[in-house]
Amino acid sequence: MKKIIFLILITFYLLSSGKLSFAEKIYLDITQPGIKKIHLALEGFDKIDKVFTTIKEDLEFTEYFEIYGPFPSKDENFQPRFWQSSNVDIVVQAKITNKIQTKFFTLSSNLPFFTKEYNFQNNEYIGHIIASDIYKALTGKESPFFNRIIFIKKFKETSRLFISNWNGKSIHDTGIRREIISRAVLKGNKILYSSLQGRFWRIELFDLTTKINKEIIKSKALLQLGDMIGDSQFIYLYNDGDVSEIKISDFSGRSKTVSSSRWVESSPRWYGSRIFFVSNRAGSPQIYYTQEGASPQRVTYQGRYNTEPSLSPDGSKLAFSSLVGGFQIYVLDLASGIQTQITKEGNNEQPSFCPDGHFLTIMSDRKGKKEINLISSNGLVQKSLTTGYLPYCTR
Image (cartoon, rainbow, N blue to C red; front, side):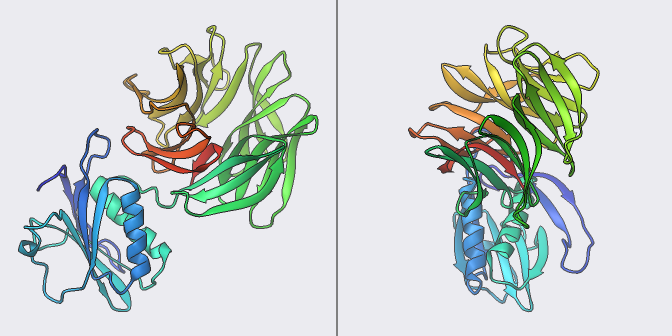
């Protein structure tokens, strides 16, 4: 088969009720540099225009796919020879009954390698689901199409929090305004954020459903939010100018200290039982990790200034910003120690791994202003989304 499509393994499924019936797993290795686009023809989607448009926009935005169609549905069985003189690699057929019945074909067989039924709804949600199944069937990766991004915009003397969908097309103003917002984390319908208002730092919790805002911790000392831990705890930094303390708190404000030092420390991040953070104990900012009661272990060695860590969902990779002339984003494979620079133009900071594990959001000024960018972990895809900074990618 042409282009870079690799047949990695064959897995058979015997499921019912519109689930996957059987599949020949095809992996498009999106981690490789210089990969060519896969050309997909969508047949039978002409009567569900919103679904087709969503699939096309989702897949083409990733830069890994080129979509053709929608072509009218054909009643006969799939005939690969009809497509072999075209530029098409994959054909996705849809038949409309009381369901949307789909079949995915390569040009090497008249048997589908993936089949699934969906609710008959002509809307963006069903389009996102079908696009996600196409993406996963061809790449073996979870799709980014249901990701959300919370980020900050500056308006004169106030900072405001906004939420966008994965490609920046739909942006929602949360209504939260503070003098300074230093970090925000979104999980489900809850926004946890650290802010400065007046002379006091606060960590606050906002419910998107009820619009109720709760102050959890208030202090004249610096408070910097890290990550949410589960559904009811979070990690944060307390710094009174003399001591840096990494603490874990529940939503009632009951806190315990897990690390304390007289070094300048920041950006605590939680993964499993490990805490990653930035410290100047080596003479310049570097990234370390520790576990409660254990001595910190240094993680970054290349570069004199490494900060803003973000862990991939499986904990295998660490993204961070490093000062090399300007700030650039690097991804470190924690097992091999291989470190890869994935940005080059302008200043690029504040990486946040998305739940799909392949894409990140960053802040970049490469166009002259602070913008949220979506980038792939190998640097191949780099897309500008909207103005703003301090993005956090979630689902």
